[in-house]
Image 1: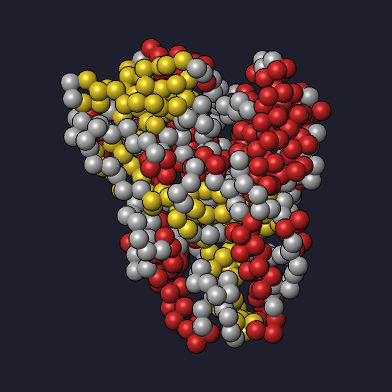
Image 2: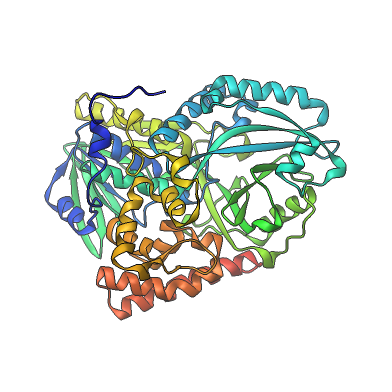
Length: 557
């Protein structure tokens, strides 16, 4: 409960500008060419983005660069869950769970428009269940531990459900083996939008951020780091910085920026995949956990709009990190699991889209990746290079806090972290229940933009034609593409269809049809030539054909 304030809240006021905050990549690059920064951060995933926000809020000058698009790696291909993680209790890693649940609630406050409560349902089956039914009481004890570790912060504790209550939530469960279930509560988020929003908020607070800026080397002067060399739009740019942070996740395996002769960080990428299918094939009202016959790994199915996401796998990955795809074997593994647990028939032709990403595990080779703890590691080399790797989406703010603490030690400065209660753009003053209660376009925009949805409304008022749908069957409208180009640093068709919206995951083939129109809008907004637009559209079509080919048993070559 919050008591009335005598005057307008200064933070909410500062985060409620009359006009949408500008985000000029050109201006950011010019700053990178001209200024010397306190911190240069390499990696535009959620950890690097949050580190940029943390550093900016502490009064440091910050440059953030990403070799592709923001969140184009792991941070757009996660399970979309903001959670403590029940299996980390099973691993005996209670401190991680406790802290993750605290960070979950911070995200629920600071990014309320993007992070929503999500109920999880575990069925209890007479045989072949997620766990032996004789262990049901033990599992309930685990849920009590979860609640007491921090789940209570959500305002609701776990519940024990009857068979009938389980079927009310998920009517297609195979009923003859179903005895009941348990429901507990966590949260979810569109990971790509969350990452982008954090990066935009960092820019709002003064950080210079740029996508499609690839770090190629770390500069050193007098034995200490002095910045990075980056390839930007075909040019070599030296970005000067008094400290350098490497936050590239799994890509640390291939490039770490360390000085020759320095011990390399341990990094072990583990691949996880998800496929989307029509929600009508699942009919779940919450996230359901299902057993996979003959495997210790359990899978989850989460409703996302009119689709359902099935995931995930957890296996070592040694391939090209920029070309990870869901394979036919992985798809069949997930579909077979769903058909074993549910009264449904899901064929490969029903799959609407897929994603494959890698978890940046901090571990040496050996053993199952499933058993590796999801802790993170921050190291500072003798030359001052700071590297952060590991962790998970939920703990990204805390990882960033510790990373900036390490950078401050290199700088010989002290400044207090301010991100624990720092709203992201669109979150200050947002009321989720009021914004989404009546549904329709306002609710769709509110869940994606929060209080910034007013800027989309202004565009529509000026040009009603912008309410036209982008992709058939999905709620995205053309005004969102315009906003992405003007204020979200979207530069390619793939930026819009894969990350500014999630069209490629939710309706891959239909998004291919829409690629031409998206290219037209980007061309108009960004001044792209017809040749550039045609190349982007062709590249997008090629990428979705590769995705389909691998999914159906082909190769990515």
